[in-house]
Length: 332
Image (cartoon, rainbow, N blue to C red; front, side):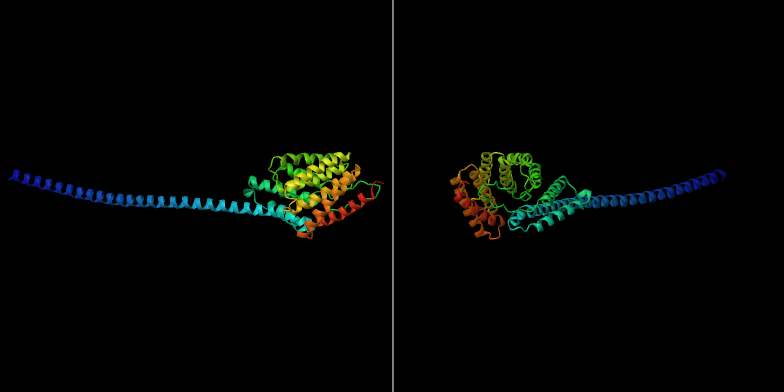
């Protein structure tokens, strides 16, 4: 009976241990299921985060491309605006200059420089700095350019024609050489062309290669044509002055001075031709001087038919009549 009782107790004890193991196994199973569930949730969250991150990455890339495109468009718009300002300061100035109404463009040059000075540093690209330098040069050139004065009446004693205007209109400074030449020409003093001859030669020397290369702007060609005329007045020998005038007329004729496709070039052409006629008169070639003065009159009348307010053409009309009268009087 004792052995049976001990065996029964041992069986109960083993049964209790078995139940405890079952309970522990059940608890471990529950924990494993919980961990698996949490891991599944975390995995789904990670997958969702990955998908969301990928979508956001694509959106960020699209937004970056859109931002870059918007910035590129803004740069293009600003570049076009700067080109428009350049047009107003160059071509529009050339159109207003014959009528004497150039103060508006001068004020625009001041506004353009103020605009560039007010730009933040991050917007000052190399091209913007270059445009700022060009606009600054243009403002300096125009601010120092004195007003035009008419040529004096020539006496029968064949006084040499005095200096005329100082400086052509400022051109598009697409090249540093052009800007420097215009600055030199703008500072040429009235009545002091002999003293300014070295500076004029320097300016002409800067513009000649630009025009000869075929890359010169219209303003650069007009400036060279006008500057050669002033150089002719400063030459000690009339023969050299004739050479300068012939070179100038060839440049202006190539721009459309003879067919009047460029009225400004035509006005300067008439002025240069008048200078050439006076050089011929100084050499005693009265027939050549009279023929050239007739060309001046013809060009002036044609220009005034299309642009009645052209001041230079009006002056050319007077100079032509003056020169024809002097040629008719003959040698003193």
